[in-house]
Each structure stands twice: as structure tokens, then as C-alpha cells.
Figure (cartoon, rainbow, N blue to C red):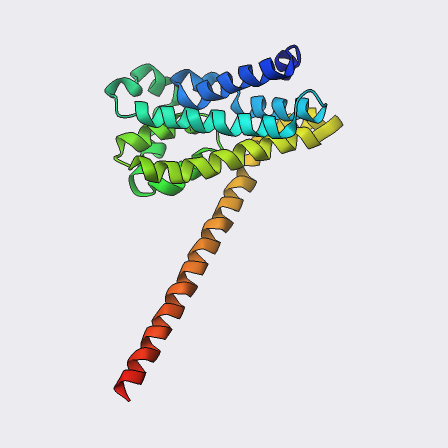
Length: 211
């Protein structure tokens, strides 16, 4: 993908990358396309000065988010997951994804952005499970932006180590999942603290009324 994009001018390279990323996350053929590799290639080109880093990051984020949104909207249609795709992905993998969607739709939707194949399938499964579009977007949009920006910057900063970074990029999902867990933990902690403070305030007011 790096060699392919490097052969085009900056704007055309962005357009090609956007098309690949949209298809990778939004169309069923996406299970065969290089999502992470495309974003890394965009980042590397930006690092070489072929295009602005912000343009590469914005393109990667918007294209994958748009693809996931398209996949979600298509998920309500019965033909969205055909038998051939299930055979290609594997029965066991499909069962694991569907089981995760059954009880943990929101975290599964967020985490799926970090991994190939499930990034393509989960939006459709989320729609079929009855997940509201607003809830899906609240999970998909931040993680899509984090994934696109993170991989773009990694590619831009990799320099001469780009080949090794590209080889090891499969491990990038782990830090992103850890980061998402930290963010969710902080949100939960702040909510608990706010609720606790609110309850204490209510108790104090009740005590004052009693006296």
C-alpha cells in the first residue's frame, strides 16, 4: 500500500486511501483490505512531506468512521451477512462476536475499531442486535478518530523504522484497548465521585431540616 500511494500526488493519494478505508470498514469486501496498513502508509507519506499530517489523520479518521456508519445502516438488511462471508471469517469467530454483542454491545463496538475483520463486521451486528444508532455513534466516532489519528502519527514518526513498525502494527490494538479502558475507568470514577458528592449534599440538607 505504501508503494501504491507513493506513486500518486498528495490529494489523489488521500482520495485513494479514503476509498480503501471506507470499503475496509463499510463493505463486506473490507475483510480482505488493508485498513491499518493504509493509515500507516498515509502517515509515512505525511512524515516524508508529501502531504500534511493533519490532512492524513483527518482523512483516515473520517473515512473509517463513515465506513462504519454505512455498515451500521446496512446491518438492518437481511442480506448483510451472507453464508460465504461466515464461511470465510469462520463460524467460531462469528459466534464469539455475536455473543459479545449480545451482552456488551457498547464496549464491543468501541474495541472492534482496533482490529481487522471485526471492524468490518461489528457495525452490521450492532444494528442487527437492536443497538440504537446514537449509542453506536457514541462508541464508534471517538474510537475511529483515535485509531485514525494514532496510526497516522505512528506512521509519520516511524522514519527509518517504518518497515518494522508496519510488521508489528497488529499489536497496536492492545495499547488502544488499554487507553479506552483507562478513559472508561476515569469516566466511571468521576461519575461515582459526583454521585457520592450529590448524595452527601442531600443527606446534609435532610439533617438540617430535621434540626
